[in-house]
Length: 194
Image (tube, rainbow, N blue to C red; front, side):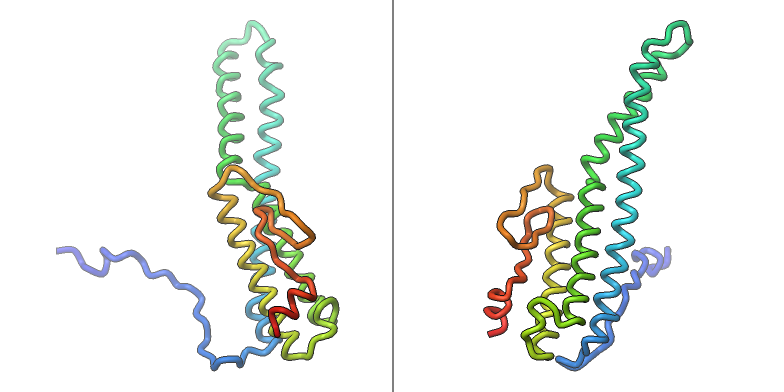
């Protein structure tokens, strides 16, 4: 009889969160544990998506340009087979790009990473909406903003990966490529904190 433990899927080791009391995470801890990790992850994913997009795009362009040239070469055995294979590769690469959306992921991850960095510098320099807020209120607003940005990016990525049509953002608010808005106007800040 097979061992029952071997029939179970392997245990996934997720990073564990340390137990804490309500309201005990300082701004330095939050920046170190949450913000820096998110910025590093978005930077890495943006780089990966950019490389994949550019490689697939370059291969598509080069292969697409070769096909008409190869078709006009006469007398070479199996040229029809070669041009058919190259054409198939072009179609596959274009189709895969429409499935994986590397370009959209690249720009979405990069803009999120840059937006998180911007929020960090606004907070630490008491710039923007943070300048007129007391320390505790500014920290609370900072955490809310960072979590809104990350949540908006998650929604955007899910929408990009499950949809073929993207909508353009409207108005003067910051928006992800899928149109999920993050409002950082002082009026919205005051309305949230009052």
